[in-house]
Image (tube, rainbow, N blue to C red):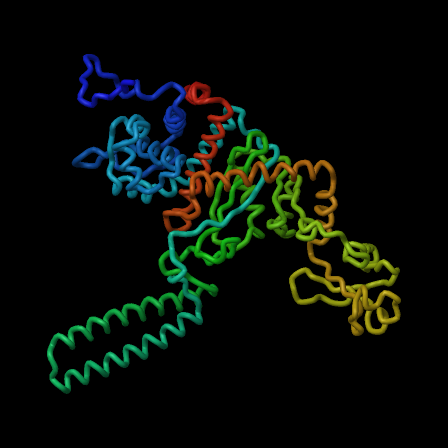
Length: 476
C-alpha cells in the first residue's frame, strides 16, 4: 500500500493568505476580537508616539500576544518569542510581527498597572453583553509562590546570626591580610583576600539593610529578592509568595475582580474584595458569600452595613461538629440585664474587660460553679467558674450564624465551591501556574489580572462559541 507523502518544495500559483490558515471557529479569533474591544487609552499603556528610530510595536498586538499566551500557559517571554516564529495562531494574531523576548518582557514590566486593569474592562464588557448580573458574588483566596527563594528569607534572628558570622570572618580576613603584609608574601594572595573581604562586606551591608527594614516595619521576615512577598503557609508547606483573591459572579462563573495581597490569611479581605467588585459592577451586589477563612466580624460588618446579605460560616459551623450540652451556643444572653444564663439556670453577669478591644468577660464568681452537679463537665475552674467572652460584634456574629443555617443561605453556599474554586483549579492544574513570574505586588497583580481575563475568555467561548463571541464584541 502506497503512502501519501508531503512535498515541502511544492510551489503554489496562488499562495494562501495568512488569514486562510485560521478557521472561523479558531479560538484565537475570539482573543483578537476581545483585545480589539478594549479601550487602550483608558488602560494608560505606556508608549511614546514621538519615539525616534525604529517604530515601536503596536501595544494592542503586544497585549494580544500576552493574553493569548497566558491562556495556554505560555508566560515566559522566551517561549512567547518562539511561538511567534513557529505557532501559526500566534503568527496570525501578531500579523506576522516577531518582537523578541526582551521587547515582550519590557512591555509586560513597564505596563504592570495597565495590565492589572484589563480584567476590569473585560468584566464590564461582559456586563454590557448581559453575561454578568452581579446579584450574588463569591470570594476566595489561594496561595501562589513568588519568583523568589526561601534561602533569601530573613528574620531578625537569622540576620543577627549572619552578622555575627560575617563580622568574625571579616576580622579573620583582616588578620590574614596583615600577616601577608608582614611576610611580604606574593601579591596574588593579598589580592585574593581583598576580593573575599569585599564580598563579605557587601553581604554584611545586605544583611544589615534587611535587619533595619525588619525593625523599622516591625515585620517577622523579609525576602531580599522580593521584599513585598511573604512567607506563606499552605497545604504544600511554607514558601515565599502571595495570596491571590478573586470575586466570581454566580450567573456564569465569570471573574469580576482579582487582587493579590501579601497577607497570610483571608481574614481581612472580604470587605475590600467585595467593594472592589461592586466598583466594577457600578452597583452593590445583593449577597456576598465566602468560606470560614473570611469569618472576621469586624470586616463582615462593613458589608452588612451596606444592606448586602452576607453568607459566611463561623469556624465552628465550617467544622460541622455537633454542639455539646454545655457548648457556648447553649448560654443565652439577656441584653436587658447584660447577663448570660447557663443551661442549668445560673447567672453569669458581666465582670470585666479582658484587655482586648471590645471583649467582655462574664462569669458567676468564686464558689458558684463547684456547687453545680455539672461541675467538671461544663468547667473545672473553681475560681471564676465558667467564663464566657463576649466580642464587640457578638450580635452580628450570632445574626450571621443564624442566617447561614437557613435553607436559602445553604443553597447559595453549596454553589460557592463550583463557582469560585474552579478558576484556581484551572490556573494551577490546566495552565500549570503555581508561581508568579513578576516580582512585587504591582507585577503579580498584573499577572493575576491576565490569568483571570484568560479564564473568562475560556468561559465565554464555552457559553457563546467563537463566532458568537466575535459577533458580540465587534460592535463594542
